[in-house]
Image 1 (cartoon, helix red, strand yellow):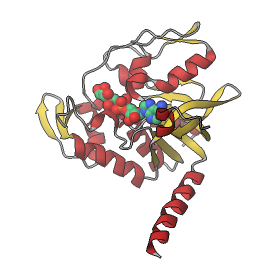
Image 2: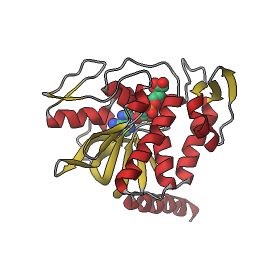
Image 3: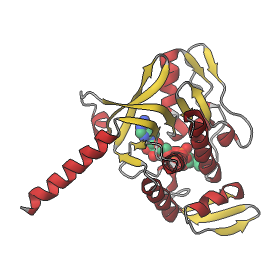
Image 4: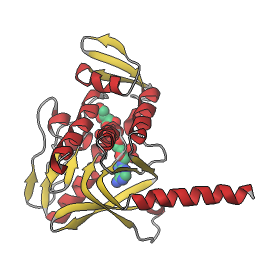
Length: 257
Ligand code: 48F
């Protein structure tokens, strides 16, 4: 019966894939440009990495360009990454390039998975696991469960390192700050607890802010900028790509790869 074979094929292989990811080297929260690029470089080095995005289509702010004009602007510092992913680009102005956002997003996702990263869509990370005061995993649930406010417990995924790539909302940093009485210097003025997390400053804040922000928790992309209190940036993507590469390098040093 073909109908039964189809159902069984999906169920078996999905849960096989999920079971393999119960213990990771790196769990990435958020599938925007920075998170996907991090997944790619980490997987390429042979690390066991999974990325969780709450949306049906990971890609974050890339698909829509700006105001749904589906082009991206990339600084020349990030051009090597664009080339590595085989994305077509055009020189637009001094040191600035443009690329099609649909081609770019799909290329990032394709290469990350092809390099060995596993991407789970429709997963929302609602919490982290602490072991001896080190962030040691993520707590996940189906996005529709949270959206509907259903009383359904989440599952835990353990990881040596966690990356917050959740964009402007810095969701995982906020969870960690709240649980540890840390003050976050966010653009939105969230002030939580006493200690201060000083993450980033300067024009290239997104890349400079990319760091291990708490034992076991790394931050990249707009999440690092937002936590550092820098204002919302325009839709310029080179910094996101560089930040993803940098966080991967930091983790590889940490894990000794
Ligand atoms: O915002 P986003 O694209 O992150 P990014 O890599 O890139 C920022 C740029 O797109 C743009 C910009 C450029 O100048 O400013 O905004 O920093 O993608 C963040 C992703 O994280 C997912 C969300 O669905 C999006 O795809 N996300 C956010 N919170 C969670 C999450 C969560 N708690 N669990 C799972 N996914």
